[in-house]
Length: 351
Image (cartoon, rainbow, N blue to C red; front, side):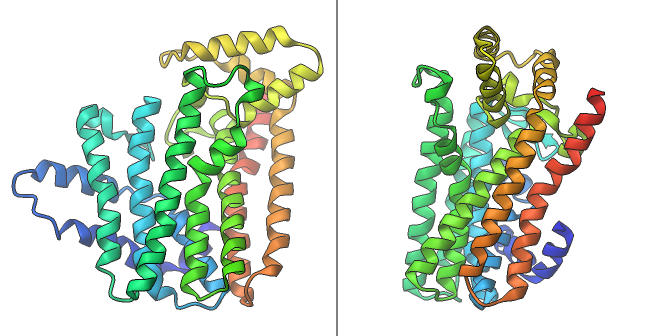
């Protein structure tokens, strides 16, 4: 499905990548050529480009001129790239997109500067765009600024769990955390796509809400894959979230199942082990085995499918382009397909 989707918007994805890389050439790197290499090294680590695709699809839903949106898409994707570096530093992760993280290949201090440089580029490429009016650039800028604030707030909630902000796991606002940390950029992309297609304000608001829902689904599926996924396909080992002591969708689902059975001791044991945040530990299979025992994989997959149907039902309220609606369905199926495939693998491995 992703291949079909990427082929549908191939010229615009290519232009988005070109805008991102060309912005690097506008800077003077005479005294820091090494930083240029670091920046280019990350900007060329192309992922699925889901956020630019989101922007294109919602622009397409309202019959917009997608060629006008590439600078905005590049700006969002550039900021997203910077956030990955910060996120990896804060989580002490080792791999990103199958390659060593920035703070692994360079020092943490240098990686922070690398993220800062990359983040700053997102505004320059937007200012330099000749296809948007000054009013449009300002509006896009405001959408992105709103999202960047939400991303940082969401990351603060994530870190706040480790710093004692929340008394129990029941107090931890997981849904709000992922809606800000991850989904805000999806919502931003959808809103900008609709805005640049000259949709009404009501339609822009609905687009942002739908984009946020899709982004939250994406993060929940990513949490799921960290436990039940294929480490080869993901380019990273399983159970990273457990080693980092994170409260994720599979963990919360397991806690709910244990609580229903009155097994509070096991919940306390898992929380104690999570609090250790030992990156060297590899013996987390007992937790994933518990999840399989209580059918956490099946429970979450059923929830994912229901959420996809809910989002698709809302598309009838937006735009008049059936091809774009089909592409939105492809995007949702792309997000869902990884979980569907890996559920079968996990179930097979447990029998």
